[in-house]
Length: 474
Image (cartoon, rainbow, N blue to C red; front, side):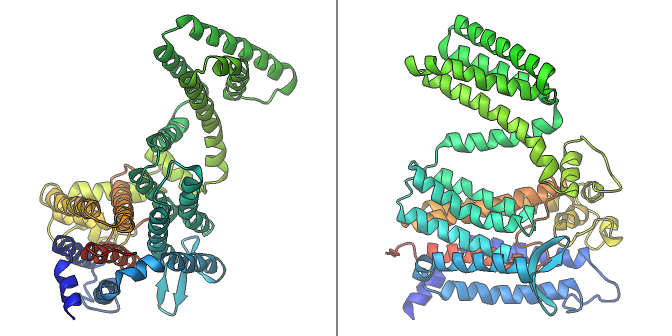
């Protein structure tokens, strides 16, 4: 009995306080977002705000249940939980209900459950257990690949639903790998690929290819200070380009200019392979591989963008990048969201006084676009308070993660931080037009039982681990 009392006393009160504040703020703003003058009672179970109240009560029970479970349960059953949730992700593909074009939900009468939300918990637990067991030696290829496999398995199953928004969230766990020793070059390469992806869609591919080749030559000069070598490389590339261009003009007749340049770069690399080997020119080899990889990526982006993404997903990306304008179609949500937030001004229009909110101009306003209600009715100040609460929670969780004695607990803590951060950043970014609309909830604020319960379990498992940080799991 004494041990349980100590556990409750050791739970981080700051994190719990912010959690409760966000949940209450979310409930009141859901009430505002779907307010019905014929159903003014906030605990009206026929309305979303009444149902959210039920989810909140259940959330408190779940949080208590998570805390009373011994921490060793999460450690020893991490793989079992992960495997069970993968099974649910497979099962939902066959017996799930289609909602908005994705088979992502189990339907039980009036109650529905989204397994992808809970899969985040199992994935973070399994990743923490594996890295703890392997002593997080991410410099070893086998350890790195198995870690990536743990992350990507649920991603692939969720993509099959298809639910690209939920799948993207799992990629946040690469932040955990970086914290635990993954090469920074991998993280930087990932960020550069994201930038290159958008550049490929915005700029002419031929000019982008030329810009990358120019950048590679400049890097080679900086690394060697041998301008003659750089001119030789340029000459060989020019010769190869003329050869491939002529072959394409006379025989193949189907390659674009960027394809000609890619093949020319690859052939030039074959010629320079002897120099790389004899001179042990590792820096030049890395620059060449970076260039070849970048050009291959540029040429694959359009293929993937046009053939793998659905039309509405492509339109959202194009609208965000300014390539396309459709304020009354695909861009309607974002356009109305920006108007709603901007109309709130500094202090907002007042609770239940938002015209954009009241007249339902913003679709999905109680779920993915709940932040619009805050922006319109509470203004800049209200938005600032909500964002500040999230930032304080994230910083607090990082501080808790860093003080853990157990590797498992620290890794799990960073997993929670990564998922919360990506949800927070992308969701608010969607509402102000900074990122494409991919349909993910704002933690603790958006309407829905699955997301609220999953975020609560994620958080309180970590708070339970932190409360027992003086104990060894093994």
